[in-house]
Image (cartoon, rainbow, N blue to C red):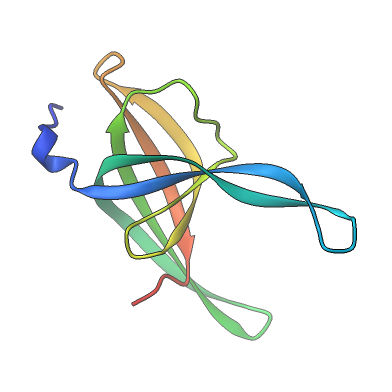
Length: 110
């Protein structure tokens, strides 16, 4: 699969989980902005379910970005609409040309 530079039309922010000190001195895990990159977005289905008497929508998507070595599976990302995704898997495409980030978002903004 060949991706042209023009298809990388979504600005996303990679979010790295880091331990930060809370207001009362406790340690919390918070997403820290790691890098802004351009990506190709591809919806990958979704589902709805009920959890604790509330409807929960889970939307899956794939983001194609230029290859890099600093991403881990416990990271997340934020798209240009403000939706935050959890990266649950990623893989290399075209021998170090691109990475495909397989993500899911819960209750996306309209």
